[in-house]
Image (cartoon, each protein chain N blue to C red):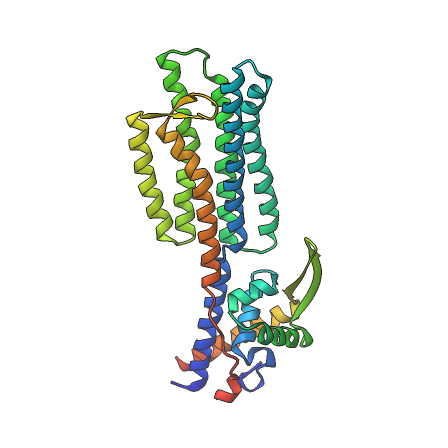
Length: 237
Length: 96
């Protein structure tokens, strides 16, 4: 093969590799997931504080109601703020895959939460089996879009491990959801309340899962570099 | 542009890698370092050279009280890159 053709092939391969790599650089979006985990972590502290005050001072205590509402508002406002902040940041980088991934997560997190608010508003008040079942079903509104977004993230990032872990978790979630197993939750300062194990796994995914996903994408961005030599084409010719 | 008049900017793999990565948008020094895995010194020299040749612009700013340098490919650089890719295409076609 002509040396010039060989150089041309080398250079085309290099250009393709670099452009492909810049599109698969998820370092900018990785902190978005870490922040989602942090927001959910803070929300979990707010929730535990609410249980603590409820256990100590009873339902009538003002802070219980305030923290109960604050738990939901903190998450939706946190999601919206982080989403728009990163959307602006990603726009300047022209990274189509990261941009698409961020939009999917924005729609999933904010959209599912808006739907959750509507669901909780429409749910009838009371404490019978029918209402308890409806109340339990709100878990599905929260987690199904997240599972969908996790699968999409795995496909877009071409990381099979994300898809496999999501598949395992979704099976585990449905087994736990249908088993209707319950444990005591919010036991600081009292006996707490019974919540389903499946809803606890949602908290774990939204805190530790999101942080782990962010770190994983960040690590992937750091590991994909390759050294390029500075040999001159004309020297080699 | 032909095989005997390839501009200096495309005569090293690192410069070519830098220009390729800038095609999809501006990048910071740190990002370019991750993409190319080049050493600070080598990358800095090549970036300055590309800037001197008019292929990219350098913008220095403070982000969260930390200095950050952003590199953007110029219209001239983009045009030259296009010509270079066309030259590579011609070379491959001539082989066929």
